[in-house]
Length: 81
Image 1 (cartoon, helix red, strand yellow):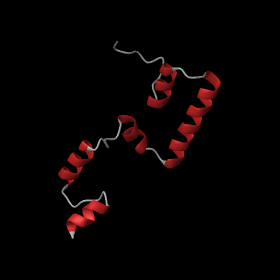
Image 2 (cartoon, helix red, strand yellow):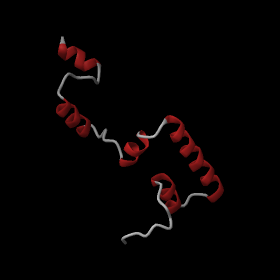
Image 3 (cartoon, one colour):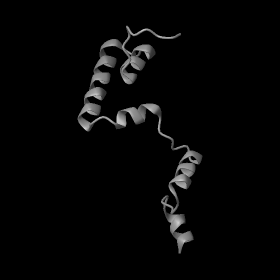
Image 4 (tube, one colour):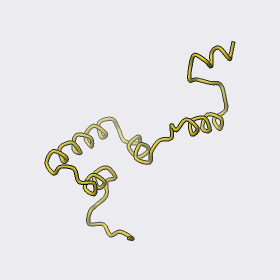
């Protein structure tokens, strides 16, 4: 019964360690940005997304500028390199 169940679903019985290994093998690892945004409330995520969209409309695509907005980087903050 278990083999037929596994063939029909992506849900498998296993330990947390086995599940993390399976996730990695399937390339389902969250990005660092996803982890950072996940801690925010839904309203805050929506606000930041709308703010990013408006900034793109005003300034166009600028990789450095986008990085600052997405990563919440202060452009005046000193960098190591």
